[in-house]
Image (cartoon, rainbow, N blue to C red; front, side, top):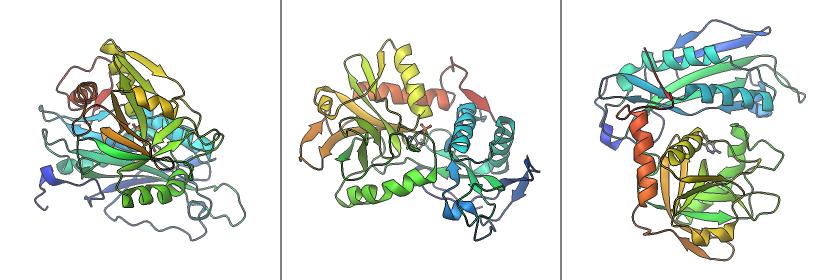
Length: 339
Ligand SMILES: *Cc1c(COP(=O)(O)O)cnc(C)c1O
């Protein structure tokens, strides 16, 4: 195995030794298969290729000082993948199968779990696709559930430093009654144009607005949005937001710290009054936002010192990471060990 410079890992694909797979055929899940090939062989008429029957999850495994591998709130990812499956008529992966396959993929690639202390982790990517053939628009009768893993560093090259984001109105990520609330690839297809343009224009990511009225903040690219004012943590509520498990955990930690947590529609103009803002998700955990520019009006919102993460975001980030890495107690039972 090659020598990995753990402190310089990008957030990207990394080839490891094994991945695990399981097929759903004739109305039931089969045996778990272990593969060392990164390729899959599917029919060209598989529904995932034509009609978007694809859902995924993103999780991380962390190595503690005690040498134990921890995974964070896997039950929530398992449940969310079931909601995604229901939303686009795919076979549900049973929670136990999800857990067994995630644990197996991690265990088989144990030596790729980054050592404690670099801010790196083993990223876990469970993936459910329709493999059954259909030419007419119908859900497949066969599915493939796969889990692959790979070591990753921080999501944004800036690390835990504030990024710039751009509000757009000419592209919607998801429709109010569409699929924004489930983790399906189709949502990402619709967001690529605006994200790539934002990057070309010098931003880390796009802030999408709620599509019906375009007044309220929906999501910060592939992450949830939150903002801080005094002792209040505010995060948007909308039917087209993907419920982030990181955000759910930060809301709990904020409440534990004695903060008031508000989950409600968050109007763009309100950005003016916040001291800190951030994007949260498994990949970045928290990415502090220093500046938000409205692409239409040119209006710029800045949060605290735009060159340094704010004190509340920093405390929330450190607390959540300390729980994930096992450096501090886990009062809510979020962490489980990969044996
Ligand atoms: C996965 C995802 C998130 C973050 O969810 P976590 O459970 O915190 O990783 C946020 N928004 C979108 C659109 C996502 O796909």
